[in-house]
Amino acid sequence: MTVFLWILLGGVVMSAIALVGSLTLVLRESTLQKVLLPLVAFAAGSMIGGALFHMLPASLMQLSSQTTFAWVAVGFALFFALEQFLHWHHCHRANAECKKPLTYLILIGDALHNFLGGLAIAGVFLVDIRLGIAAWLAAAAHEVPQELGDFAVLIHGGWKKRSALLFNLLSGSTFLIGGLVAYAASKHFEVSWLVPLAAGNFLYIGASDLVPEVNKGHTLGTGIVHFACFLVGLGGLYALAALGH
Image 1 (spheres, one colour):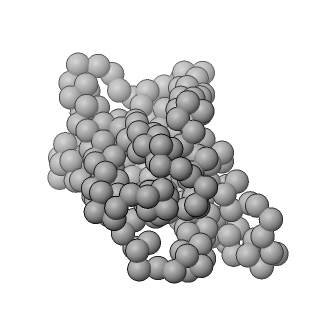
Image 2: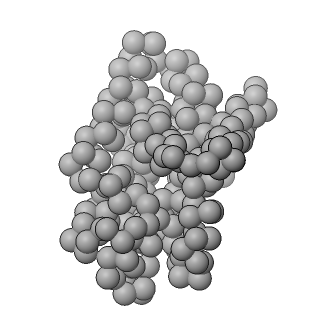
């Protein structure tokens, strides 16, 4: 397939992942939490592995080390600022403390996050399709537990099930919009800087958002399970990188 088709397909499938949130309607709260945190740990390993084993090596082949790490820092800071202003991470998990006004901030933050993510992942596809696939897989691993948590928060915040599903899907569709914007921009501008930008994004989400979620006062056994899931995600992305060489 052409790069455009990869970006289009990746954007459509990533947007559709928002529908996974509907699973919270049939899962018990205790079951959801048991599934959610191991998935978050797996996603953390996948995102950090994607940045370290795929995006950073590719960036260093395209750009100087100083430029590469400058864009990594920009990507990290950009998503830090996004969460600070929108308080998205305060309701990252399902809980009853999030009031309805804050549910709108979750949707706005998620839409901006997905748009910037689509922009960055498309930029990776434009540099190398195999690299783009690895980055997309890591991002998708993050989207599943996020959408489960966000959908549950909307329901707890008083949203009707149909409205929560529709608006979650709309916020997810901005990933596709970001990808198409990046593709259009690539016709006129150099977009190789989007790869280290995506790496900074992945490192921030993995280390600042996801790891703390699974690192809060659990039993030793639970901690071992979470760490094992993290290693599976990290090792999986390393294996993909090794197979690509």
